[in-house]
Each structure stands twice: as C-alpha cells, then as structure tokens.
Amino acid sequence: MKLRRRTHKDFNIPLSSMSDVAFLLLIFIMLVSLINYRREVKIEYPEAENALRTSAEKNLEIWIDKEGRVYLDGIPSGPQGVEDAVAEIYRSAPNTRIHIIADRDTPYTHVNQVIATLQLLQYRVVSFVVKDSR
Image (cartoon, rainbow, N blue to C red):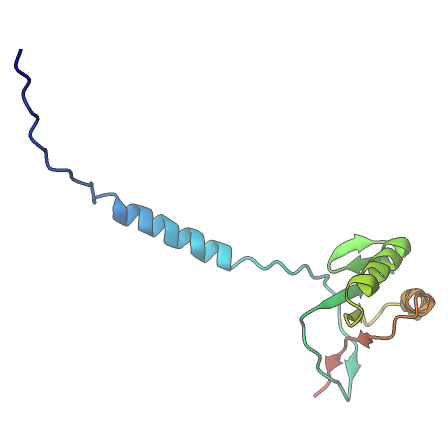
C-alpha cells in the first residue's frame, strides 16, 4: 500500500476580526485608567492664611465629617480602628504623615478625640488639611 505525502497547505490567520479585538482592548484600557482608587469623604474644608504643602505619598488620611464620623482613607472606622491603624503604621513606617481632614462645621470635640488618640500613641508626624484662602 502506497501512502501519499500530503502537500503543505497555506496557513492563513484571519485578520478581519483583529481590528475589533484591538478596539475592545483600547476601550478596556481607557476605562481602567479612569478609575479613581482614592476614597474621599465630601467635606467643606476650613480656610487658612498660611498653608504648607506636603507630598501625597505614604500618608494616612483621617477624615472627620460634621456628625463626628471618622474615616480612615475613606473607609468608616471608630476610635479603636484609628488606634489600631496608627499603631500598625508606626510599627511598619514611622515616618508616615497623618493628615487630619475635618469639615468646617465639625465640632472640635470630635477632632480632639482623634488628637487625643494620637497623643496617647505619641505620634508626632501630623498635619491638619485646610483650604488655602488665597
């Protein structure tokens, strides 16, 4: 029995759908790049005449709204959560700056509770975030 050798057939890649795939990939990349991963609490900043700018990297933001609710980087937390987070940050990166961001109408007692926690932990790298009045 004689076997025939197959002749090589031309191999073709269909290119008609490649533009559709490239377009969908472009849309996906554009949508992912627009996502803002920073969580913010809507507050009205107090004003200050002299403000010092700090870098936004390696900061812990403590937000306090009008009702006295406390947020750590946009996530709701309580006094014990603030204490645990600050203690953990102090152990891992002691030079991390803590930003206290309070609403203009927040009673000072709520801000003082957070400050008392930071004093108890002897954390000294703290900034109050305000809106520049210029």
